[in-house]
Each structure stands twice: as structure tokens, then as C-alpha cells.
Image (cartoon, rainbow over the protein chains, first blue to last red):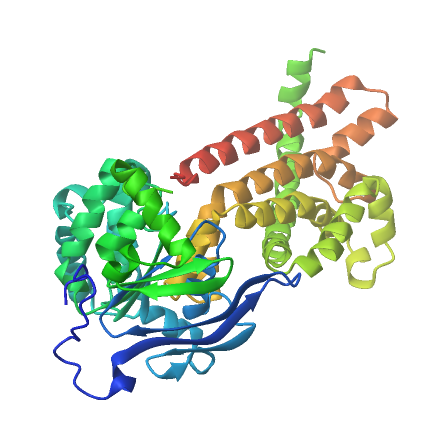
Length: 272
Length: 212
């Protein structure tokens, strides 16, 4: 299923069983409070289907990133439950859970003391893949994200442009072929041109077709381009969940506000 | 007799004193690094332990060196031999810069790097050994450099408790009001400090990680 098939509810061909097995991630009445008691998320419930790209759209500070960090247990729930592949996150070993889920953040967080090769091969090496398999995988991924291995393999992150770094960040997240990907504003720090390029390439990545993706953004254009469904988050709560088509016609004020803004500044790619 | 003549006449003793000095400082620094780096890691990782650890090291730092040698004198095993005593005191002095820089290096690692490391499923131990320590290496080394230079100076006082080293000349010179004798201790000590500073600075620059 292409990630951009707006509103398309086709399930991947390998999923034929009941609803339960078609659900990759399920959030049930999730809440998260800071240690000082401030609530960042309250009563958030939604399901992410196998192989879909769910976009969480919201302003900065709305709680989108917090929701991602609860899924891979970088943060611990204050209330409710999250199930990943049918198993509650508290029953997962957090390390195993995170290695099962690719994670890309806006600041990328490449290791500055590692070469491109070492950065991409991080998880395969943690998982103790044989060396030749790791090497082949790194070369494959570099071609996939459009970086010539011979030229970039031994460079360090500071020798790369922002766009190249984020390509490496995506390659690193894909390295061990995790079935789930969490993307936190992955294109947020890039200039508009590079951002557009990466978004389009990302949308076409075949390696992503079967993957379950949760992407956090504040760009309406990005949400419409990449999401099979769009969840609008406002002040720590989910205010609506739409297919891109429904989103454009939504009456709910927050979603309608995004759309109005998009129409007002079409050339800004929905930059808010 | 010129200073140069004095040095060439006594070069054996001066050389001997220098070796003793290096030995005292070297062993003390090994101890200080062995204790200080782990303590620095604890300070960075366990904020509630940082006050007592840094406070303790701070207090050790404020005790006048001569008094510290005196305080350690009645300690059973330590007080038994002058060099043990001196090494323990010197290591205690060297702790603070090492602890502080280790902690600063680790807490200075970019949040994004640490977040990515956690998100990729690295264990805390792997993050420490493969990410945080390598990235703090030059900062830790800077702490070791500062501590070494400091210790080379303070080690001259170790002669007061009979631990030898270049301080011997200084104390004898003071007692005999002989400037040449004082310089015979002071100049090699200063050169040692400068040399240690240069070598460690070089190493530090070599190992400085490129920060993207």
C-alpha cells in the first residue's frame, strides 16, 4: 500500500485475519503528566493499522512527540495502555521494543564520532548480525536513500549537509528492517526545497510500503502528502482523525483552521 | 658558582629527585583517574549523589596541603610510609578536576544524540561506553591535565613528610637560605609541569571529537 494512497483503506496483502492482527499499535486512554503534575496528554485513544502511515498533526507543544516517546517507552505512561503488536508496552522489554521500532527525530542525533557506515550499522551491530550481512545492508540502504556508498561510507556527520544527515538518520532507523517506524518531525529542520525532495523520495521508498508508520509533524502539506490518516492533536488531546480527503472537508474548527491556512498560503506547503 | 655549574655538579641528585617526583605524581594520578572518572560518571548519572561527591572533593581541595599531609599521618596503613601518605594526599587533591570534567563531558553530550541512542535500543551501559565516554574523552583529558599540573606543584610539599621528590631541594634550600638549592627543585618541577601540560594538550586535541 503506497503511503500516499489518500483515504485508501486497502490492507496489505499479507493481512487477511481478523481486526486484531491488522492493528499494529493501539493507544487506550493514554495520559502523560510531567513530574510536576502538568498534563501533556490526556485520554488519547487511537489505533494504527498494520502498514498504514498515521500522521499526528498539531502545533509545537501539543503533545505529539510525547505520544511517540510513549510508544517506544522513552517515556513511561501516567495512565492508560499502549499495545504494540497486541502486547502492552509494559510487558515488552524496553530494549527489545525499541529495536523493533525504527525512530527518527528532527535533530537526527547521528553519533558525531561515528562514520556514516558505523551510524547506519548501529542496530545490526547491536543485534550481532554477521559482518558481511551488515555491510551488504548498509550499502543497500545508502543506495536506497540516494547516497553513493563509495563516496559517503567513511565520512563523519559534520562533513554532510542537513539533508544528507537526515537521509542517514532514516537509513539508520531502517537498518534492521523494523516493522514499525516512529518519525518525529523528520523533515522539520530542513530548508523547504530539501524538505520537499526528501518527502517525495520518502513517499516512494519501497522499503516502507509494508511498514507501520507514525509520523509527527506540524506541516499540513506533509500530513496530506504522506498520511493515510491524519490525527489532529490539540493541547494534549485528539480532536479528530481523518483520511486526507475527509481532513480537507472537516468541519471541526482545528482541522478546518489548518485547511484554511493551507488555502491561504498554498506555496508554503502548509507550513504553520 | 653559577646556577648552571650547580646543576651540572648535582645533576645526579636532581635527576633522582625528578624521577621520585614523577613516580609520586604518576601513581597519584593513576589512583585519581581510577577513582575520579567513575565518580564523575556517578555525578552525571545520579544527580542526588552529585552534591555529596562534589562536596567531598571540594572540601579535600580546600584543606591546605601541608595540613592534609598531617591529617593523614595517623591513618593506619597510609601513615606508615611517607610515599604512601604523599600519594594518597596528592590523589585526593587531583580528584576534583577529574570528577568535575568527567561529569561535564557526559552531561555535555547533545540531547539528540542520547535520545537517538536510547531510541535505537541501546542499553544504558552501551550508551555510556559507546557514546557518552568517547564523546567526553577530550573533556575528561582536560581535567586530567589540569589535575596533573596541579599535582606536580603540590608534590613538592610531599618532601615535608619525607616522601622525597623535587621538594627535597626546595625545603633544604629554604632551611639553608640557598637560592640555588631552591631553584634546583623549582625549575625541574616547573619544567615537568609545562611538559605534562604540553603532552596532554596535544593528546587532548588529537582525541577531540568532531561535534556536528
